[in-house]
Image (cartoon, rainbow, N blue to C red):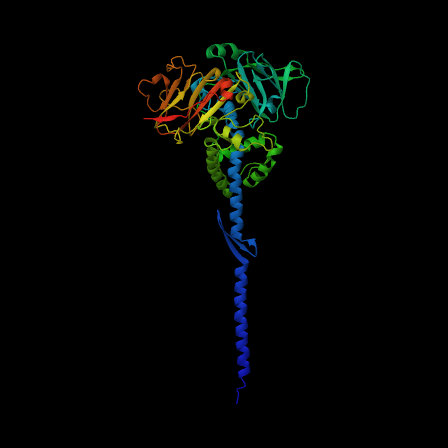
Length: 493
């Protein structure tokens, strides 16, 4: 006789099986709805296709970090120039539009990669403060430029400018000022509130050029009713300063200052959209929270490392002389535009280690302007180190109508090396330079002078890396057709 409880037990067993299967299916469903993928920024977890709460935060942190690193590279031209603008007013006590002279080694020490022997004269103009402003350029061997706050050329001055070395008056109009009737002036319409105007003296006799040309450089305000009191150039003075883009949060403070002071370019609107989430926004105070500050600080570290490799191991163009490590130092156009894009890596490669640009510095005309070729490696492809001794063989008849020079710069500061010798440069202007029988010249770099080569030796700091600029002033045909070439710097015992 069957128990009356048997059907109940069977039903209970069936429910148990169904329940177990349901739990198993639910677990399988949960497993299917949770998915983790491995990426270069670590694992990312998704639930029903959506990022988990932790993944959302990780992705936003990474997004903002990447934007910070790229914004560092984007901001280099503006920040580098802004640091010099700050020094003009704060360190040197300069007035808006007052020309300051940077003639000697000590005065130039804060400038990125200056020429040791060339006299510089420069000013910053706050066009909101001054209104229309005039730069008087004397006739003679003088070359200069007017730049906007991104270091784009607004006008060349002097021998490659519209005055063609005959001298002239350049009237700079603030952004949006509009066209004016100004007979006797070369009119320049600025695109930014802050502009730089500067010169270099190119004559063979440095002291004569200073004595004759500098007193003729004048600056003053302009209006339809008349002009202001002319200002003449004065010595900047030996001050401790640097226009090198700063590290840490100071970089973003400087970049934010540029953004707040000047009009926004159409080309930069997408970058400013990204900076908004990092606390930098036009018309608003820069007060990053703890998260933003950490990301910005990390962005500077990685951004500068990227900028350094982008400069010292340029991939934007091949070596200038085939088979060597010499490359163009200046790889950006004066308007920072290529045929199909605005130049980003190109301008960062130049302005990370240098300042200012002009048509003269990219001359295509034999006998006029300048060209700069840089090297960071020796003939074996190793980075140049101050602890080693090197030789650079300069073949006879360098293609320079004016003069040539080779200068050693500190890798860390991108400024002239500070050594006991006090001279980071050898040039054809050096009166006691030693020549070989065929007219070639051997230049030596190292911590100590090689025996018998003191006149042709540039001292390096043994604990630092360095790089070289070889400059051609008035490059001739042999430079452009490359029938003359410079061999690599070679390490010697």
